[in-house]
Image 1: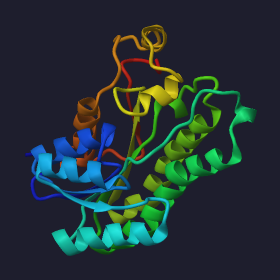
Image 2: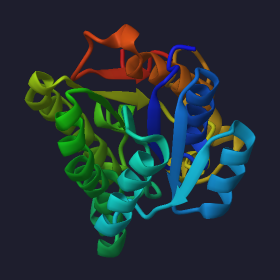
Image 3: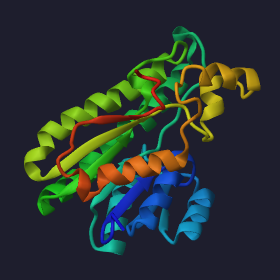
Length: 246
C-alpha cells in the first residue's frame, strides 16, 4: 500500500496508460479521480477499480478547474496530479499536417498541462506538498521521423517538467515525467500508421527488450515516482522503453 492515504487525479484515465496508472494507484491504496472526455470509459474503469470519475476536456480551463475542485470536494485534498491525457498524429511529412490537427496536439499535449498547473500549483503551494507527474514520451528524447509535431510536443513536456521542478522544489512540490515507448494502447495504431505484423515487427526491432510497453509498466513506474519512496527525485524523465533510447 505504497500510496495509502494519498489522493490523485489521473487525466485520460479511461484507457491506455492512464487506465494502468489508475489500477495501480487504487491497488496501492490511493483514492483516485479519473478525468476523461470519454465518460463511458471513465465510468467503466472507475467501476472496475473502485475509483471515481469526472467528465473533463483537459483543453478547457473551466473543465480543468472543475476537475481540481472535484478532487478537493470529494477527497478533502489532492496529493498527486497525473497529466496523462495525450494525442498523436498519423506518420506523415512534417509540412503535411493540417493546421487544425497541429492545434489539437498542442492543446491536449501542451496547454492541458499549463491549465492543470494553474489550478493545482497554488493549492499545492498552500499545503507545502504535492507531486505532478507528466506523461511525456521517448518521442521527445529520440524522435522518430514523420511524427515531427508529436515529437515536439513531448519534448516540450520534458522541458516543462524540468522547469517546473526547479521552480517548485522550494515549496515542497515534486515534478517528474515518464517517457514510455510505443505501447499496447489505443494510440499504437496512430504511431504506426497501420497495425500490421510487418509494421509491429519494424517498431519492435528498435526496442532491445523486444516488446511494447504496457499500461501495467507505466502504472508500476508512476506508483514509484509518486510515492514517498521517491521523495528525493524531481525533474527527471524516466524512460520506460525497454532500452529504446540507449
